[in-house]
Amino acid sequence: MSLELQGCEPRPSAAPTTPSLNKTDEVADTTDLPLLKTLVLDCKQGAVRAVRFSVDGNYCFTAGADKSLKLWNPNKGTVLKTYSGHGYEVLDAKGSCDNSQLVSCSMDKTIVLWDVSSGNWSRKWRGHLGSVNCVTFNEDSSVVVSGSVDTTVKVWDTRSRSQDPIQTMEECKDSVTSLDVSDHEILVGSGDGRVRLYDLRKGSLITDYVGGPVASVCFTRDGQCSLVSCIKSTIKLFDKTSGEMLSEFSGHINREYRLDSLLDYSDKYVLSGSENGMVYVWDLVEGGLVAKLDHGPGSGTIHSLAQHPSRPQLLTAHRGMVSVWEDKEQEKMEEEENMSSASVYDSKPHWM
Image (cartoon, rainbow, N blue to C red; front, top):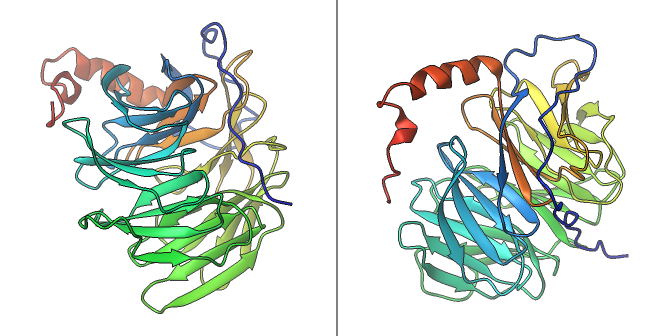
């Protein structure tokens, strides 16, 4: 049976209540975790399908059910630009390595490459036969990799005017649900319950059965392991080379939706959304639950997460909102910085 594309629930009629934190027993030092909710952004895009940081962490993007893509300053909660051009809901987006381009994918079966400064699209690829669930750039943003309900992974050349992909991978037997890339590898999660690792240097493919429809995949920052979450199952950490399961994380609720799971900026913690309005945080090495981030009553499913690349700041998407989470120390430091006109966030981005 094919895995149906699942989105988040409809947006709430009112903004969330005062942020609250629900932590488990204090079994670990959590001072470097983003446990303090500092902002809630009402994105006004219908349901927010995905939230993603830019490569430097200074900006973020939200993909909306209203067909739009928005660029934000998550530290001030301000919209910098809105990108319109998709014909249906936008499901994923990523920024290029130099912040000059965005790529997004949609239920309209297209992948769109945007110029950040002008707000116009420069490429629109239509090679997929179904909704495109996930998209990402490679390391130098010379190619875009996309995964679709049509069970294929396609690679597109951003420097070419060609409408055809430069490579198509057809090994998946169900919808492609999640992607991650390294400098020479593509990690693919699918609704067929398998994770596939394509090594482009060796020309090899390693396939591992992980026990259920895959919701999310990502590499650890050292590139040695992969983190895999499955619908109606647990989150697992695998050795990338041997396929050995190194650790397993459980306790969150994931019965129906595709939820993001990821590692924090330091590779010390595993974070995952949940269908009960929480984000669950586990210690990577010990495997124990160390914290729960409570989004408050009526928050619904927390389905999309984005981790800042170099400090404890987390973005979480639920219904039509995005919450910004910081650690307490970082919050105090930012307050001191904002008293000075030299704050990096007081200046406009380079493309404005």
